[in-house]
Image (cartoon, rainbow, N blue to C red):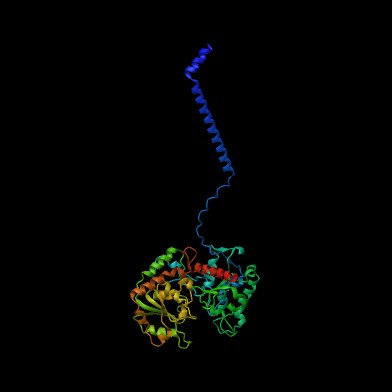
Amino acid sequence: MLENLHFKIDKFCPRKTIHSLLIFLLKCSFFLVILLLFQIYSLRSILNSPPPPPPPPPLKPPSRCDAGLVYVYDLPPAFNADLLRNCHDLDPWISKCNTLSNAGFGPRATSLPAMPEGLTSSWYWTDMFAAEVMYHARIMKHECRTTEPQSATAFYIPFYAGVAVGKYLFTNRNYTARDRDYQCEDMLTWLKDQPPWRRSNGSDHFILLGRMTWDFRRRGDEDWGSSFVYMPVMKQIVRLTVERDPWDHREISVPYPTGFHPKSKLEVDQWVDFVTSRNRTSLFTFVGAKRNKIKDDFRSLLLSYCYNETGSCRVVDCSGSRCYKGTPEIQEAFLGSDFCLQPRGDAHTRRSTFDCMLAGSIPVFFWRRSIEHQYELFLGDEPDRFSVFIDWKDVRNGLSIRKVLEGYSREEVRRMREKVISLIPNFIYGDGNGIGKDAFDIATDGVIKKIKEQNESNMR
């Protein structure tokens, strides 16, 4: 029976076949062992290898404050807030309370010329020397202001020097040099004791002066103005001022305030469209008054000339106090003229230049220093692209202003006006941060850049 079983196995599963199957299974087992060892080795390599680097962070959009942060000193109120509270005493002839209201913007303008609906609420009768108050109010709400001195790039001193000194300038009272200087000296005495000042000796500090720099550059006790700029502590401080000394590398000129303080970019665009489309019926205009106490007053010459050129020149005579608190006639004259005459003012520059350009009128200068080396951050350094120069000496010798201006083709006038209008956003001071980059932002960025450059230069 066993023999029969062997016979059956041999018959259905021959020994050769079994041997082949065993060899096949042995090969498969060897392959599986090799595969298993490879998997073990691979796993150990993965476990022992360093982790892959993290993915790169997403690109960070540029920050408005990449240039740096500004720390605002909390000055004793005697140097700013008390000056405003005592606004009745700032001028020997008239109260300044209304002028300095609304964070320096002044009272809202009334009786304005026709303009786009909704813009009238953004117009004020703003004083030409109110920039100190305006700048302080704006920077307190600025996104690049820091309350931590250690994180600041620049330190702003909110002293209303122009307001403090102004009351002593235009009066016959016997004010002494000490009267004109004591508030400036007291402020600097306070400032020297502050830790940020002691760290840098003022090399990263700045101030805005709301009057021309010449009002703070008294040499002798009997001379004009205050000696604020010449005080030793002021040596390192960067100064923003409405007219700079072209030879002082620590000064930056900023535009005089106009009366237009838009709240949004839409309002800026509306105004730009409005002045672009104006129908101008006069070749040129002059807004100003005679100065009878000045010998050979050039403004008197311009007024007489314009009265004799009634077909070409439009005149707004500001004799007396007619233009002191603002008048719609000024805006109407600028809006209706191709050119506006800009003789020098109390110094070489004039607030009227910016009122003129705001209306899309092309300024005509008679002194190079009225525009050259001034306001480059805001207007660029090529004044010939947006203005005309006629030497005042040539006018005195009989040169016809009308003929000079008539010599410009309509295409040349169009190009200059386009350039003037393109600069409007750069020299207006907006009401808040919603209008894009305005004069306030450009001034702040410019002063931070200058402080960085000065500090880097000192480290070399």
